[in-house]
Image 1 (cartoon, helix red, strand yellow):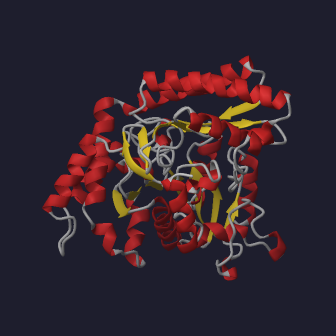
Image 2 (cartoon, helix red, strand yellow):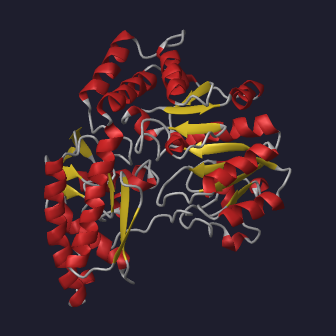
Image 3 (tube, rainbow, N blue to C red):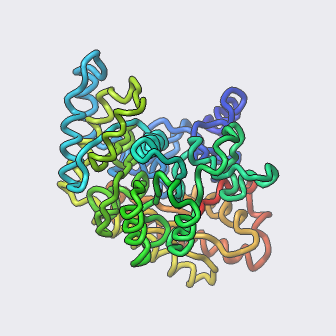
Amino acid sequence: MGKSQQLYNKAKKMIPGGTQLLSKRPEMFLPDLWPAYYETAKGCEVWDLDGNKYVDMSYMSLGACILGYADQDVNAAVKYAVDKGSASTLNCYEEVELAELLLDIHPWAQMVRYARTGGEAMSIAIRIARAATGKDIILFCGYHGWHDWYLAANLADDKALDGYLMPGLSPKGVARGLQGTSRPFIYNNTEEFLALVEKYRGKIAAVVVETVRNYEPKPEFLETIRQVTKKLGIAMICDEVSSGWRLNVGGAHLKYGISPDIAVFAKAISNGFPMGAIIGKAEVMNAAQDTFISSTYWTERIGPAAAIATIKKMQENNVPEHLIKIGQKVQSGWKKLAEKHNLDISVSGIAPLGHFSFNYDNALAIKTLFTQLMLEKGYLATNAFYASFAHKEEHINRYIDAVDEAFEFISKSLKNKNVEDDLKGPICHAGFKRLE
């Protein structure tokens, strides 16, 4: 057990859950063996507290570091902002520059508000939509954060069923009075969406969609939502926290020809520095003045400075094209190697945000074994790959070679029914299941 694992055992006694983010808990990857903490991160490489170096072929800080860790251009902009004063009684001019940049990229929008995380940015969007429409009910598909408006969907009439919609996301602590205010529907299920609209007609404030995630939208899906919401005076909100900046510079909704009322950004917009943005049409966004939406740290300078530098670098280097290219290569590699070693897997996700799953009863044990084998080869790896600009051809080629060896081992382990015996620690946790 190294310094990272020892520190995590200490942390669990002082920090509920051990970490601030469910998706970064070591139990989600390789319990007792995953290096929970890093000393240095640069490009797509990470050094743990014992000085072990790994190539990050997993989440790249859950998709936040789209350019790579410690990008020199973004860091230079941040250091300049720090040296000039990261906060003041006055406002930083960068928030106006960033607003102009975002609105230039998204001509359908006229106004911008800021936050510093994706979850709170989504909550701001919901507050604005409810203020603008005077309605309460939210229809949504996909994952949109931890706040009460979202978890209210898991408040069931029968408390014993709480959490059944998205297993792993408990609504404990959410006021039961919010029951019925958020209603989910399945992505690409136009009929289910239309049925909910009819059921709650006249009461709906907003429809929230992850523009794209595991599957491409069917031709009529997003268009139907836009047509119906416009006709009925409902705000359409595109959650671009994960999808934004990966398929194109800006929101993925631009790629699909959709002009929503609000779009929300975070994660990749600022390459690892806290930043969130809510952009929208003036007639909706102006409702922010009729309610109370205000926070001191939404005015600090580092987030906007990082976002401006990140966006400009993405524009200058056509970063989305690179992400798509290497993401496709990784997904193709998974499929070919699974076929080579007679493994049953399913591959999903857009090219820059790829996932695969083992189609076996003991899938979690196999996933854990894969992570264990890859860690031994010097990779932070799981059944997902979030592409970054720092990932180059040589990283992908070496990774695919390592996956080849890991899949070969797993194939033999399955044949000999030794998967659990080949593990050096407990099986990883399942976490929560996305409502797709």
